[in-house]
Image (cartoon, rainbow, N blue to C red):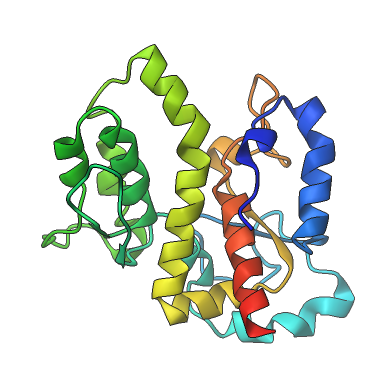
Length: 225
């Protein structure tokens, strides 16, 4: 089941209890921590910055060690085309999770602009692990008024979660990578989630893509049982 992102968006002092419960529900080991981002170096599990694996668990991640650039594969910027609809938008093919996320945001104002984010022949200027940069650069193609922005804030992390689910259900190799992280606590870093715990200056939890990622992993694990 996808997490209740409205709960995670509460001020950190109120959300901390929910966060602990969420990690327990998803069967996440908070003592095993992996950091990932689109430009992560290709290092063995536990050897990345701020990563932790208890001594007794190192052998459990041998499969992950053999997967080149496994951290980059977890990123929303990784080129991994999938099909997923957006209400009112004719296009349904997207190159990355970031493309879908930004297109959905644009759809609240202009379905035509949203459709322009759809999968199309690419000049190949960006490497696979940075394909989502094209969508990120266009994230302000339209300005949302306060009411529309409030509407987007209510749905954006659910949008992120369903896009992540579509990505990993479409690509078996990427699903295998995600499953190979087992029950590790996955943290997107640095950027907005630079500080451990993912709190911004207002004390609110940020970068919920990591929670959607762990939820998708749990669904994939359940499908194997």
